[in-house]
Image (tube, rainbow, N blue to C red; front, side, top):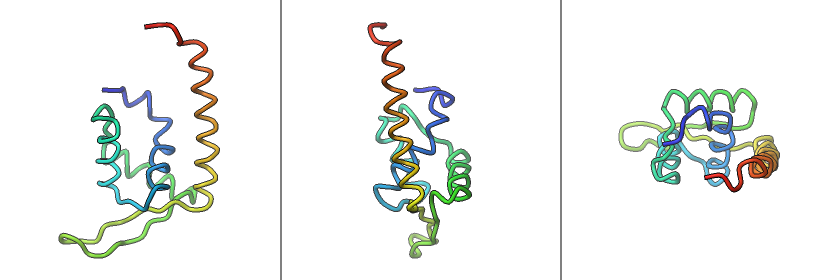
Length: 109
């Protein structure tokens, strides 16, 4: 299991990437993160909703209520045009970070 502080600075990008693929609701996002990482990383609900609030304040995502399903309405999140631009920049930055880290970490096991 990965330490949460090792990935904390990248949560915005992870969530934006998932919402970029399709509009999603919170529980769906947390399950998708766990599934894609083979349970090596799980996001806590409080952390997830704090990220949603931050991304909405920055106008990178918008939320809306979906249809009533299984007893209630789900709040879905969708990426904005500004969010897409931010995600592209974040991906470019991530590729630079990976290149730099590989310079120092390659060959060590």
